[in-house]
Image 1 (cartoon, rainbow, N blue to C red):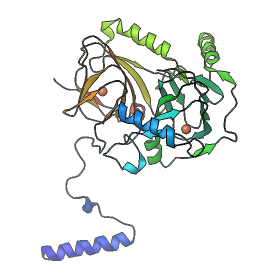
Image 2 (tube, rainbow, N blue to C red; image 1 turned 180 degrees about the vertical axis):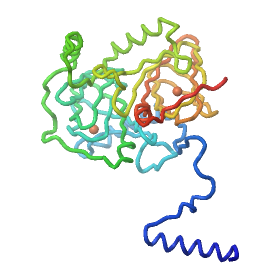
Image 3 (tube, rainbow, N blue to C red; image 1 turned 90 degrees about the vertical axis):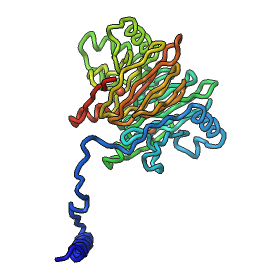
Image 4 (tube, rainbow, N blue to C red; image 1 turned 120 degrees about the horizontal axis):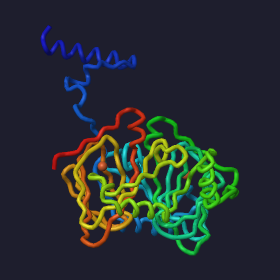
Length: 346
Ligand SMILES: [Fe+2]
Ligand SMILES: [Fe+2]
């Protein structure tokens, strides 16, 4: 059989198989699988002035009567833009709630977290727990917990939303339910839960849920960590993970959150890992090198470090510390025994 005849036969075979929902492995070519994990997620940085400008404008033209949430999503140019995802596993967006507004109660299979950026005194209610929001607070709404947001303060509230929406989409598990009323009743406050947590831990009693990390506690723990230079991490500066106080495990099943402090002028060593990380510059300014490209950030900016990309951080101020909030899919990679990291020789 000549080469041309063979090609024609293969094409005919492919067509006949396609009609029967079959596919030949030979169509993939000879390259086989890549020697290293690959992603179409691109390193990317979003400036706060663009995000903030869009939020304020949305505050003028988008009503919470017509839209479930007033949210601006950060879109990775390496992914299908229609979905509005920042990575293949996690979504980051920013939410804007004006005084006297309420974002109605619902629940869904994607897990979510809120990291508070601006404003004081609005609250998120999670399964009946009122979480009053202050800048730097981290509030969790794990899978299928009821949540609604109310702003009874005199100023607009802005917070960062993190969700495992892309992952749950890939698993075909997305669903949402509305609570029968616009707001759910408040049964307890975060303060009451925190004092109960203390006594529960002392007496070995289980507490069912933990939703609210106050910034005053996080900041105190971060500063205590930064007092001891031996506890610095060569790749991340002084890094504090938000562990689940009830299980000792990651922040949520699918998302690990952390906050890290870079001392003035600090430059971390270069490394890479199979998890993908979304960063938000909470304080200060710096430069992160990702896969040979430099991304300059200042307070409010957000950026993505895709999996297996070499990266390092620099606090470019000689006098001010920088604080980065981050969220990653590391718990998923660990659960699947796919987590790996390695330092570069720089
Ligand atoms: Fe939600
Ligand atoms: Fe890293």
